[in-house]
Length: 611
Image 1 (cartoon, one colour):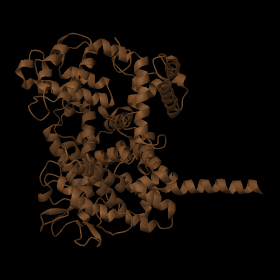
Image 2 (cartoon, one colour):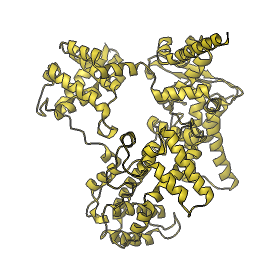
Image 3 (spheres, rainbow, N blue to C red):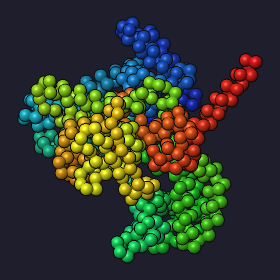
């Protein structure tokens, strides 16, 4: 039976390994020949499919005969979030390419025919879906007991389950996890939601005959691999060790520590938890051990732990992936603890100095990631991308205003979906305006900005032409240095966009009136907007609306690289702008100067050739 992922078996081969090896199955060259010979397509559609196949080969930089014709290629190499402005003019153009390549592959691999066969089946799925249909009839919001879109999603999932030979009553948590391993990207998430819908249907007694005997219970949390539990006695010992290393300067007046390095404490706790779980897996420690000090004093065990940490670079995120820089950071933390406990640290010092993975981690820790560097180079090299970056707040604001104007012209209130989108567009526009018109502060600090009270961190003026003032106390910043800057009015509208957000968009948040934060939480009264949630939504909007895929933190990298490229002698000014030191800028952005030196060397050689 053909798997609906487009392969002959239930387990998908890693695409990177498949492409690198000899291809034994059908290839994109065969797909190209097949599409060219299809008579059921119009000339225009055929040409578009062939162009998409050629584009896929160009992006992978391989002959079409070396690329396997698998749907996994689209999901893993060209995911929904894979838009790259270096190769596509817009997010829309990228998704159009993706759909065309996927459509050609689906027909070639027989997925469409298999789906038609599965759809025509008469079984418990068809009987369950027929029983659900009356619950979805009527007008949404007025008497409909179950949303019709949920039924449509469940019909799509029924094909997935039928392909595995599973009826509704066969589904349980184990099979849900099995499915989750088989699929990637959007389809994987759609499967998870459908499994949750099956549990939702248990509220209707008339459907229980076809439903699983017990709730499936496949929540996002169940996707996370079950970690080996840490004994409570170990947690107490870890807590005491971490406090001793990260807290100092006890103040009897305030009854608190003057120096409390929470960031380092988080790294140490992660390092110790990872160490103990590896030690349990390797049999280096018993679950009944009371004191962990002997484990940390055992040089042979420490070498085994270090080797396993570095080996985890080859694991997936689902199974505990560790980058060499992270493994090195964890081992440095363990050595710091060994020194605190009076244990000889020379062995781990030797590992950190001489192990090739540790050396790689050290180099990586001192330079910008390839992804961030590529982003910065694109901004420097391409004027169109640079303009999108510097005017992103205008584009996001315009999109929000269009939705508001449409509802106003139709004389209606915003729908729930429109309200949520307008809120995020406005918040993203405001954040970008602060970053570009003021200074690039970290997203955590931005979400924590208070705008109400005598100690408000961002003060919005009553007079529209006066500057907005931002003051973030030292205790709230990563570098423990106060951040203060004005946002003045100018011809480019950053100042105006922030005031627009405060007046028009912020009131759309449910708890805005009682929240002290500039960016209130969507559902939790008195809380700020979650930084991780905002970061993910901001990235999605920048990709799909501004046509510039980037994270909030890349606001910082982008500005700094542009300024250093144009004004290399103003390093002190630029360092102050991002609340960092000139030394850090030279370290992380040194590739800019190196690139200029290489280009200058090329120019000098050309001058010799002209002589």
